[in-house]
Length: 291
Image 1 (spheres, rainbow, N blue to C red):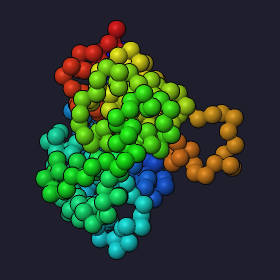
Image 2 (image 1 turned 30 degrees about the vertical axis):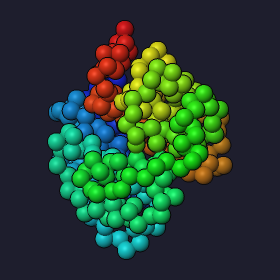
Image 3 (image 1 turned 135 degrees about the horizontal axis):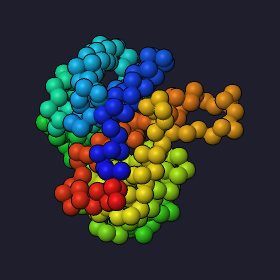
């Protein structure tokens, strides 16, 4: 299959329907935001916007309504929402030329980030949010990574054995820095991505894969991981195949919320990255998927 067929416009439309149905079924702030971000990844990918694909107007109305509700909520800081998904959405939409009124919510996030102590601002995910805010024209101070992250950044040979929390933080720092990965770093992160995806730790696996596609050197392991994610698509448009022997009564959340929604979000974020953000030297290499 060609890279453009990782997800056809018709399949993208079905995934958009799945994401909307999950948000409507559970109606929680977290489900709303994850659903909207997944839909944003589709809308911000030009290949998915046609008569059979996703509808930017429908998404725009839903996203602006969500932003208005969050800004008006006096307890918005207690909703447990991920500001990275909001600022990533704004950056994606701006690059795609899709107008969505998010400035009021972006401004609120920028104010809250600037008020955080430096130890918080030195964390990888916060630094990535700060980078995206600067891309949106906000005046956010740059802060150095904390010591543990700095040590990992200087010692790539330790990445394969780093605890997952530290590894996730490291990848956020690498994304925030924008520094191009060399061949060895790309190889290590591709191996990590493939291993974590096979264990269904899709957040860390997809994050590592997106980093390699954006800033590194695509190789066979990268392509294999990309194919693995594409193969997780289900008939209803969602992603991920759950263990048929699991006991639903012991799960902390319904399968859609705890598993399929995060998997779908990461899959479409990855496809958006491949189709719109891969660096020039990678664009041709990723086409190996077609061979």
